[in-house]
Length: 401
Image (cartoon, rainbow, N blue to C red; front, side, top):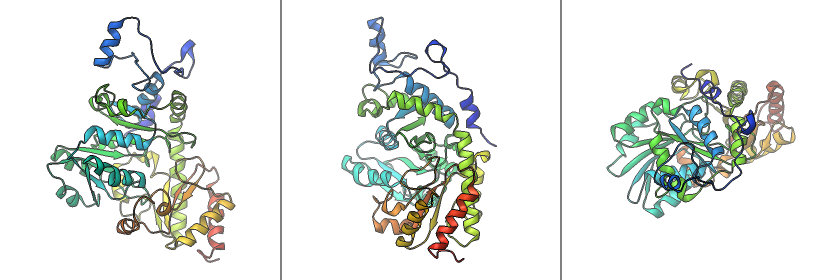
């Protein structure tokens, strides 16, 4: 075990008003000052324990940001209203007109669309590369490059980024390494591996109940402070503030994250090993057959497993659609986008979360229309869930009786 984020989180202590065991929820958009001079100072620089306006900071988001920093072992964190807002604010804080981004080509469809369709409008170009080809990454960096962007485990193809090597390339070229760690909280700690900025969609595993949308950015104190600067901070000026009640809810859920991640990983590992033994093409970094299995073992916090996401490739889109419908009928899980829920969720990325990527680009990255992405739940009886899954596959003649 290289690092234990759960122990970091366990050390957090914040009491509510009147001694409540949970921090009080701040139901205010603005905050009073006893002296005018203090307000003036706060507009010029951050003052610990002082709050100005909830778009800038509020106590509930500050409590949650401290927990995210403990999770990611970062100096500081910023809470946002979604994962995409965290990505957008990070990129726009670092880059300006004329700059270039080096990005993995296998990333979440929404991120891909933002990079390909929106950033060029503002004069920011993106070069998509095979992030596993380190020579390709390095050779595409030029004087205009400002950052390398990747996902620790890619959505939806489950490719594992070599974060330590990418960090060396970034540092050699004096640019930042930005990592989306949404698929692998607890399992991977990118900052410990050399990442400069870590992004999360808190909507997923960290919250775990699919009842809100939120995001986070973790980095050093200087970068996070810049994000909330009243004159030039993207989080301050674009205003992706998370509601205090949602912050409080996520904060409570993060204290059970270590338990949930272990169960997600345990169940996913079991499902993958069983399906692979039956001849199903499975993508999961916990399998020895996965091309990045050994890499994952060298960078992971081992006690939390290989994560709760897997993909199976049935080649044919119609067959994949039929299987998902059948599995929902049999209560294996739910046909829905998103991930990290306590129940199993499944979808066809090519037609949903990666639909923003053109068919041509999907083919280049190896995303077939028959790939089903599954976010495995925390089922107590995973053997029962597997039996149902196998019955569905047998009924559709994917597997022989």
